[in-house]
Length: 226
Image 1 (cartoon, rainbow, N blue to C red):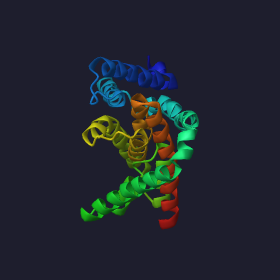
Image 2: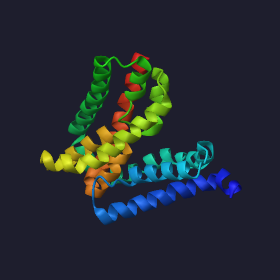
Image 3: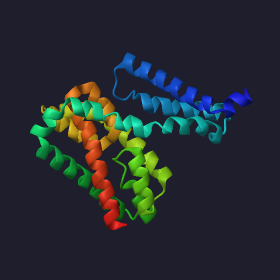
Image 4: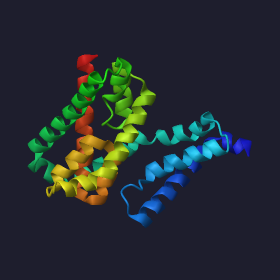
């Protein structure tokens, strides 16, 4: 048993198994609060705590899954390609929308952190919270932040975005699928994009595109101020 727990296979099985449970609960309840990733995280914490399993053992499998973050993000290009004609027709509004959203995200984080007297390390860690994890970690390091805090902030941002996206779209009566997709991708990266794909193919494609644009802008911002 100890050999199994210490192997990368354990972490992979636990991650996939708990996510499958979270997905099943989400499909049964149809509640935006029953986010599969949120449920998976809670179940993993419970298992590790109850059975006193060292985090290092779990991370062997978790790191293996983390390796696929970049190709999974790149795979979003498929939905963008399918909607390429839409991108060409609405190029300027999409670019401007993603740019404004990215700057608003970074600016609000910086302003609120300064307002409440948050230290510089925390500020640098939270600024890239709205971009996908690989980019966010690199930006955090360049700015002198703590990558572990950044990863937590990225996950929390994505989960909240995935939960609130359908609600906000209905609340503000957003009828344009391009606007909805860009807003979701800019504010809540890949986790939000997964929800955008559920809403519609156009929303998913535009959300995936917004991830790339916001990521580029965030990196440029980091290069300017670092």
